[in-house]
Length: 458
Ligand SMILES: NC(=O)c1ccc[n+]([C@@H]2O[C@H](COP(=O)([O-])OP(=O)(O)OC[C@H]3O[C@@H](n4cnc5c(N)ncnc54)[C@H](O)[C@@H]3O)[C@@H](O)[C@H]2O)c1
Image 1 (cartoon, rainbow, N blue to C red):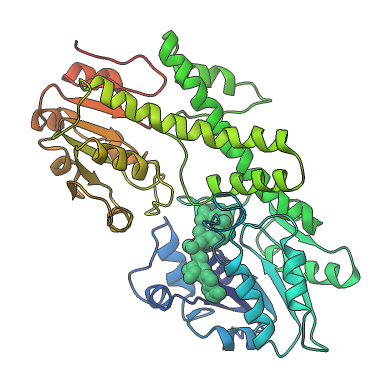
Image 2: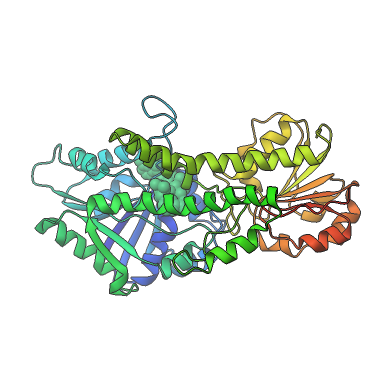
């Protein structure tokens, strides 16, 4: 098929690459190019060993790469040749200066805008795919309109709602696609071009169009609402542990109310991932900036409960293992922040491991997809750490296991075999409530779920 139209994406990360692979797959007449300043990442996208793990990703890359999907290091040429440019660069929390620890660090977005301005030889539609504070499009426009005579730039907001672990199916069957634009003739024209792309596979009623600011803000608010549900159920899990109520039963009873719904009501050791914490803190910062301290405090409490839940988990391990972990071997089952991804950014496992090391425990880390990232995350830590992919070998000789990621394989392990290989008394701290607690107790384990009575032999 002849490639009639061109699309560029700047940023070949967890969002940029899968999103563009889906567009390439659904729009075979488009030539889709993904560029990145990280040359090693581009090389990995061009190799047999993709830089990220995501179910279904290899297949979709296999179908499109080299046909109408291309990964390139040449940002300059990419900008020159493409009139539709997605910006999917990272927007981490600022670590310095004003707003440190809360505001979004927009340096990568700003650099990208400057690159677009510098290399553009024709007018462009620039699409914010990154998650950005409301009003960022205005800053982008100011940069983009600071030169270049006749060339014009129309900025759109098109935040991404896919979740890691289910990215490909989320991209293929999105709950909605959100497109924000100026409501000017030029803005509406640019918006229509982007709608045309998604309309190839997304039903029209699922393509929402709004003004730019609603679109930018909706992404932050959606993540804040999701994280809020996790913190809400986790806060109740603490009360369950004090009252012999069972968090799974409470969550089911509450979630069956159609006004509330059952999703995102699973208690655990806390949310992780690169987005929830940074996006809520970004929202908190915006509320403070706009003089809304009560609203800021409300949302900040979601992050505080998440930290509290992780502290409770550690306190539970320490308290139940006779107040000392020194010299004890603790197996961490799962290091990714959730199942079906190798991503460990903001994973609760990082915090828990650090705490265990500070108690002088020997930590054995196991994960089917995230060991390489775990090694990077813990490279500067002092203490005894081992990395063992096989969960049975990881558990052998351990005093306790802490389940940190809801990988399906951990549900189905032969816990009888594992128990035999561990030091007694053996403990399981199930940070995701995924194993059969009664069965493990009957095998001989002391079992500590989240939000349910512990099953203990002494
Ligand atoms: N990861 C998710 O699940 C998810 C979901 C929805 C939205 N988001 C948002 O999408 C954005 C990207 O997230 P991600 O997880 O893909 O990040 P990422 O860190 O995996 O990828 C970002 C990429 O951008 C590249 N980059 C930075 N500056 C550049 C520049 N000037 N030129 C070219 N490349 C540049 C980096 O090298 C990196 O490879 C963030 O704003 C994030 O909040 C992420």
